[in-house]
Image 1 (cartoon, rainbow over the protein chains, first blue to last red):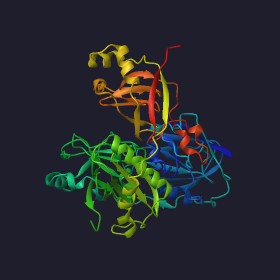
Image 2: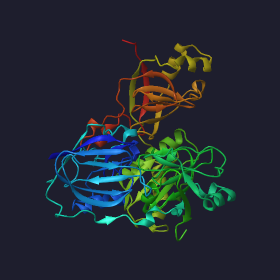
Image 3: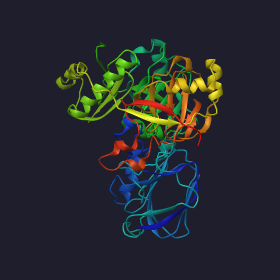
Image 4: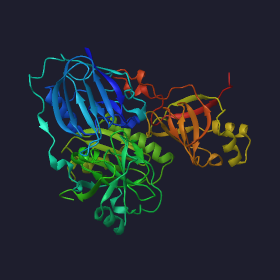
Length: 280
Length: 223
């Protein structure tokens, strides 16, 4: 185990993440884990790590200082890069037009405490803590072992990723779909929703023309990750990996698990729309 | 008895509704259903998550398609469980110092003295309907209607773990520190959620209360 990086600045948020800890929701523990599962896998794959190794998940503004020479791989909001980082080098994650969440993998995975089989930090549930200035990051593998010489960039991001095209998220009917009236259903699919800046690992708030939730109060019931809940103000909230395990708002739809990565990488102010999953 | 229904909830998941309203009957039904799911999980079940009147069933991909015989038979199988009288849930006593900053507010709203509020709060045997929202956070049922108190207009940015509180018609205990809008009436030393207690094979120990437990608050002096 070697300490190879130090946190210069955690930016908006820097924490250790892996695939989370599914299976404990009946105890109130959110499943958690990387917001962009595909990017988490990609970062590990570039270093020939097991795909489920813990990585760093960073928001914009994060800055890391290299203490010891090491292979690193980054992915997510930027596309994917792998290189050999030299002592003193600063790895920075400035705002990206193409996404929100950055991932950084180290050889053999990042050393971290595990709880219920996962290293994922879930600050809201008081499971682990986010990294702070001065936090040291160690890798479990040999820092120098995995990257061939002269390899720098394997999967540069494509220009199309910067486009303003509205992304369509495929959805399944939510448990209360039948309870929403025709106008609400039409409004849900018929408009473009903007991701609010009040969005985080627990959920993404959407802004648009409000849709009316069904009348009456709903008894709190279990909530799946990806649920599109409609609170009384009519502005939907998509529950994400660190969100509450139960909730009392009507759920009009559920974002298909395969589309959650793209939703997570949608920046505040950008737009999404919803489309029915084939077969609905 | 309520007829059990299965509502689809995205790929490979179903919401099984077993009661119309929360209450004693729903609590007993949820206990019986969870016990059965624990003892004899249907094929492919990955996880179950109880709510007040429903339980979420999540299956491995493709193992519980709509219309499969196993899935169709499940409501009837679980309904049978409800006919067997269950042992009452264990009673857990929670020592509380009733000195919360909102005790006076609750008392004023109820038209009672602070002392009467504490006595009334401690006189009820509560039911843990479910754990949720935060790790080990109990949804307690049975609060005396006289103590129902609206939530704070502005939630506190940080409430300590162990705070005993009233929010609307609910009472609960904050299991982890965090923001909260409930009226704080007291505090307990008991750690409702403690990851250190989650040894392999005994993970449930991380939560001091379990769904189905019954809870009595025992007033303590400030010492």
